[in-house]
View 1: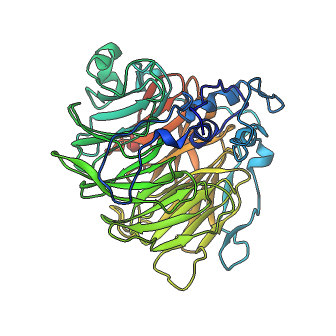
View 2: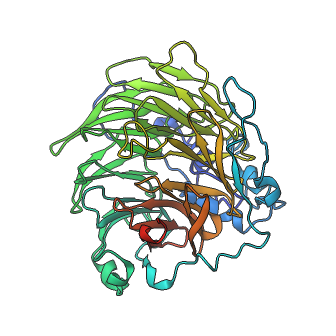
Length: 505
């Protein structure tokens, strides 16, 4: 291998997910520039590979300006993009014909189709959202980022704070000055009170913020970057730890509930559990079980976690164990996300194979899924559990799973019998983010072309909508269920007021 040759311009059609840009660039990176990493070793210095200055979701912006018949105008590594979803995203724009899949084969692992609970909301050919449009007085726009805003997270304790991460090599912590947008009439005043978290000099390559998460105490914010470094910040903005053991971009960061361990998943195929406190941040254990980039991680409890990868597998690992507790290989393409249900007994995964699967980890007699949901017509980018059922703050409400797909639909699934409860299909573009409200009564979804919808879960209808400029990369509810934030490729974050009393009789 020679010097990294990743400074190529990428204007190809529709690179669709954050991992694709990394595959396109990092595959040309030499491994000799990275430090040796020992399983369970201490944290050390890291020479970040010279990846192309693409942070993943940034590539998605090109797919809206290119037709499905367009061809790249720049050269690409000959084999590095073999498994890329570049052409997947451009193959078609979701239409009512591809979105609505009546009787589409929602199956449990052992049963035939069960569609009697499925209620599909069929949009008009020309969608008219006038009756649900959010008035400007209920929208607060945060404008200080100078590049795409990829993700956001509300502080779970200090609920007036929201953190955002961007391709401009910064994260920001914003303070809301009131309960609703009208309390923050002067946006410039809000902007002046944001705390800037710099990940490198402005314009420096490979510093894009790729992931972030608050600790359960709300006192620490972890950010992951394209340079392979995880950073831990105090709520007040002081950088307290640089965690430098990964040798590739970090795709996912998760705190355990106790807040003493931080879990990271990286392009370098490994996951790391970091021991973090006010005094130090060191590697507790590194796990090298995946054969390809690790795309997502999620804690089951304080010591056990799941990870997924482009190698099509899902591993369940435990701190102190040096082999996976379980490995699931039911997917036939890259696995994009894994999420534990509130009880920690069921694990959901979703994949480019257009399926989502639910694994019953308590059942040691089989490595097959409890449910295998197969109705989506294109890749499933994310899954989210409702904050309901056993182990949640809403134990009397039924547990359900939401899946969001490039086919433009969000599907809600009954976990008891594996049936599809709802198909939420008003979006006309790929859906990248979905989030249940804290009560589980509402769900927000965000798609390409800047469309945000808030749905009533019980009725399956849209109750609020907002059309912004650019693409939506993430949506998130605050703890009080009074605001929804949406991150845009147009460098802004829109914070939408929500009053549940309007929609609950």
